[in-house]
Amino acid sequence: MKLPGYYSSGEFAHKAHITKKTLRYYDEHNIFKPSYVTDKGARFYNDNDFAKLQQIQFFKYLSFSLDDIKEVTLREVDSKTILDSFHMQMGLIEERMEQLELMKSALKDASDIIERGADADWSHMLDLVNMNEMEQKLKKQYKDASNISARINLHRDYSLNPVSWFEWIFNQCAFESGYSVLELGCGDASLWSRNVERIPANMDILLTDISYGMIRDAARSLSDNGSQFRYEVMDAHQIYKLDDSFDRIIANHVLFYCDNLDMVCSEVHRVLRPEGIFICSTYGSEHMKEISSLVKEFDDRIELSADRLYDHFGKENGKKQLQKYFSDVSWLQYDDSLYVTDYEPVVEYVLFCHGNQNRLIVDRYKEFVAFVKEKTDKGLRITKDAGVFIAKK
Image 1 (cartoon, rainbow, N blue to C red):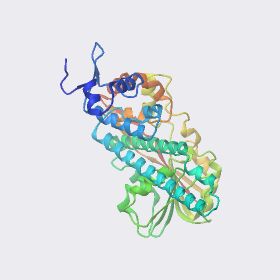
Image 2: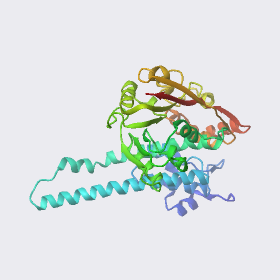
Image 3: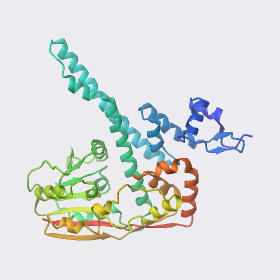
């Protein structure tokens, strides 16, 4: 019996230009499931499934493994998630184009050298054509961007405080015209793109991140905003700048990822000008506790993060760590919570955490979605326990 608005597996395969065998393989390996299966096992797909399949085919073209594809492709489809996916896919294409241009240039240079009778720099050539390393960078970039997007979307759409996190952080920085500013771990530059009209004139702003992909995302998001911004790939443990260089240094949810906090704080203190301010945000132990409780109720083996980040640098212990380097340290709490009435952003948030959840959810995905939907049907209030330390030199 033909279902209204659905395609049989044969019809869907024909429209999507793939084989029924491929569809069945994706289904059996939990990569791409049909939207409806009859009691007799007949598989049916709808128009939303084309968007999911497009993403899978895109990542196959970029040589992602099926295990990687399983982790990053869309589970639910709406216009916003599709747009987010397209934007990140375009970023990966631009990244790949730049890599190929580098390879093309290297091949041309090597050809010219050999034609002149000299020896090519084979070590450099092999570095450039190391496709495996390129693929790993692309995968990490997409996963990082997806993770950030999932977190930002949940907080942006369901926070009760009318002043957004990025507005609030910007307010605490007390910027003035002419300041020199350094951000460590800038990510996609949301702090600046969401406050671009409020940036004082004549500020010199250096955005840094350990991830080249994030620096590219930051530069693209601020491409229309003049010469105030500079960009560098930089590890916060080694800030290659002169002493007393910056009026403000910002580390937004960064320090708990740093292996050696003493080294980072020492470097920040060194490059911060006298009377300058270090603004560093973090979480408290109560942050998003309802999400953790929810997934534990579904499967008590799930850990959304391998590490409790606030144990490394958090609201409860951060002041003591900063006081070793800064004379005046205070904590400012961001007063907010989430009230979520839709299950999709909660599912997306969980899937893009850094823990073991995908391995434990993948075979029970529809069951997990139904579980989250039941928990959010009447609204789910989620604690936000976050803020900033203001450390003065």
